Image (tube, rainbow, N blue to C red; front, side, top):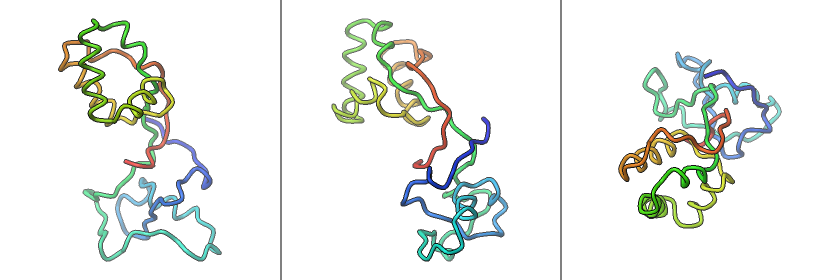
Length: 146
């Protein structure tokens, strides 16, 4: 994937910053690079506790600067399923996301991050449908929440 350009205004308000300059992953991590963008006159910052986050190759808080492929909508999948398959598909996804969130995702009103896409593909396989079916559309974007 390619690095995604972003501005400070794109960063969610509660996004934690990292102050660990010595971390070997600092220059590849959103938490650190966003910190470098914050103006020096900003009085209050939302930061990770430096005593609790040691950084390094296995840092559990590492967030890549690279854009990820988000999916939007899966209405087109229904036409490629048998009615019983779609009923099972819908039931499993409603159990995972809730009814309203299922429909918001189905219509493409909410970006589906890579981990949710994996889950949806596993459900497709579980019900006997083609797990390689495409979502309605895709977009490259930064993953601020996962």
